[in-house]
Amino acid sequence: MGKKIFPCFTISLCFIVTLSLLMSKYPVSHGQSLDYNFYARSCPNLLNIVRYGVMLAVRNDTRMAASLLRLHFHDCIVDGCEASVLLDDTDDFKGEKNTVANGDSLRGYEVIDDIKAAIERVCPATVSCADIVALAAREAVLAVRGIFWPVPLGRRDGTTASQEAVNKQIPSPFEPLEKIIEKFTNKGLDFKDVVVLSGAHTLGYSRCLLVKGRLYNFRGSGKPDPALDSSLRSNLQSMCPDAGSSDNNLAPFDRTPYTFDNVYYTSVRNNAGLLQSDHALMGDPRTAALVNRYSTNPSLYPSDFIASMGKLGNVGVLTGQDGEIRQKCGSVN
Ligand SMILES: *[C@@H]1O[C@H](CO)[C@@H](O)[C@H](O)[C@H]1NC(C)=O
Image (cartoon, rainbow, N blue to C red; front, side, top):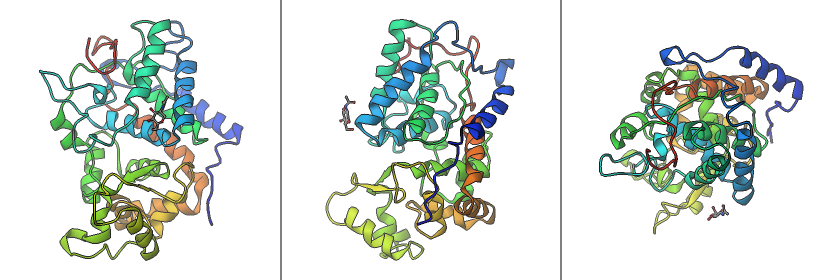
């Protein structure tokens, strides 16, 4: 029923989009740019190692594709794409892992650690964890036959992390859309990126914790969210029972959680977005117009997704002499 796979598989279309992006390097701070050939000499097998590690992880657990994409987003949106999200708490700082947004829900750390270990064996002290996270997200989406986007490289790893920064910078599904847009704008992204990157919810599941308010007690009313499609609501109520501890049960973001398609947008348009923040996209005429556009005309999505992923991957990157190349992704050197 209206399920459309994005048509980036016409090789020629992918090729043209890719080529035009390859022509323009993304400008970053300190006049240094990320570079598609950054490791061409120093670690020529990098891409194969990442691709293989992601392929194994996704083959073992398809949901890992969504998890690796989310990991990249949560890395970049808090201060920048500098792998701070991977740092364990230390005596000096409480990091990003054990926060409301990430604790008990962010996944894929061990996939990145395994890939990093494999890379260290062949190119020691060369490839940043931040670049591995960025590449792994792309390879994860490819592993479920989604959209390819080019990933320029040369990010360096941050040397600190902050719990507080997560709480301030990560958008929450319970926030009003204006607040979410503001958090994106603070990173040089805009309302269009909010809609386009929300499309990542075409993959994966949410914990029931984030959904139960809409099912049983919307904004303290004691009733479900009247805006939620009633047949979806009954389905969700059986996946996420009110009684007992169903908070960590999982509910799919759309009917096809393992397929990178436009069902997310048709769902949102039909009052069947899972989270309040998904539904909120229909509450502003600018974002609603984009949801309508991608749901009715999916061929317009891939180039916008490629552009937004390019912007996301460039947020707050460290280059040149800034930061470091971590030996282990979970701790600074
Ligand atoms: C495979 O996936 C399961 C479920 O997520 C996980 O518990 C397990 O560690 C994974 N095994 C490997 C080898 O990655």
